[in-house]
Length: 283
Image (cartoon, rainbow, N blue to C red; front, side):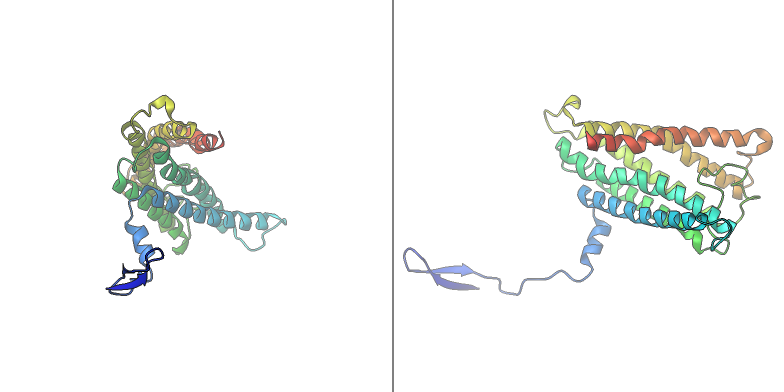
C-alpha cells in the first residue's frame, strides 16, 4: 500500500510505502515475559540491581523495627523471639542478598562493555545464576510464613544453636536451603565473570589494558570461588545434621569449631568481595 506526495524539487508525485496494517502493539505484560526469558547481560544486570535493592529495602525495614524496639527500655511491640528473627534475617539479607548480588548487577552491565565483549561467556548460565539467587532469597524470606517463624539463631548460624535440637522448625530449614541455592547462583556468576574476562576480550585488549573496575571484578570473582563453595558446603552439612542424622557439626567431636572455621573462611574474604568492586567504581 502506497500514497503519493509531490516532490519539493520537481513537483512530481513520489510514492511513499505504508504499512498495509496498523502497527502492532506489544500485549500488556510482554516486558515481564521478556525479562523472565532474557539472556542479555544488560537486562540481567538491571534485574540483579533491582532485586538486590528490593532485598535492601526489606532488610532496612527490619533494622527500623529493631531500632524502634530498642529506643525505649523494656519490651514494646517485638517479643524476644521476633527480635532474634529480625536480627538474623537483617544480617543475612544485607550480606548475602544485597551486598554480594548488587556487585553482579554492576559487573553484568559494565564488564562486557569495558572489554569489548558482545555478552558474557555463558548467557544462559548467567540468567540461571540470577534466578537461583532470586528464588534462594525468596525461600529464605519464606520462613516468616511458617508457624514457628523465620530462623532466629543469628546470621552466623553458630552450631549447636542452629542445630535441630535448639532451632527446630521449618523456618530454619528454609534459611539453610535458601542460602544453599543462592550460594550456588553466586558461584555460577563468578565462573561466568572469570571466563568472560579471560576468553572474550576484544582483539588488542590485553589484561593490563583493562580498566580497574574490570580487574576488581576479576579478583572478586576469584575470591568468590575460594570462599562461597566452602560456605555452601557448610550449609549442606548443616542440613544433613538437621535431617539425616549426621554428626558433622556435633559438639562432642569438635564440630562447633569446624563450623566457625568454615564460616569465617568465607566471612573474611567476604569483606573484600563486597568492597573491591566499589573501589573499582570509585577509581
